[in-house]
Image (cartoon, rainbow, N blue to C red; front, side, top):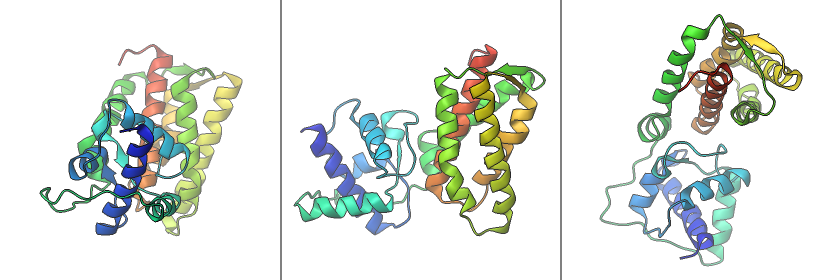
Length: 237
């Protein structure tokens, strides 16, 4: 089995699973357990990075271990899967496996990757430093990736028709611009201010009816931001 074959079959498998339970995010464990996909260690991480960069799935980057990756096809991903099927790529669903069960936001993120638990843990570690100032560093990888993911989610937040999202969208964009200015000018800002301008608006977006795929992007961005802040403060986590 080559990586390219694994990736093509995973895409088609996701398409088939999406037909059974539309508008659903599935964990990589769910897909590997329900389809005879042959893979090697590290391939799921590479697949998620490639699919994310090509816009075939929601979000970019990996979270947790290889069996904890949330996967949900975008419209582009669905079209690409259909193209592959037209070319003869196919894979069957294991009949002995339990019936298809969608893994939504709470399952794919909270249960499989335990990302909310990680976010809460990072917030708890940051809480005692609320009155401290963070000296921004444009070389911080976590900081740069957090800004990228939070900024990536802005069009989805701003495109929502919910009245409450109008206010959230304004604060979220202000927060991202604030982070970018602090990073680019390598200035200091208080943790309390960062919480108010950035973290809180995006946490409110997580509580909205925003698409699960975009919630995953936001959540990943927040985890990266919290990790960056702790690192810049010299707090071991």
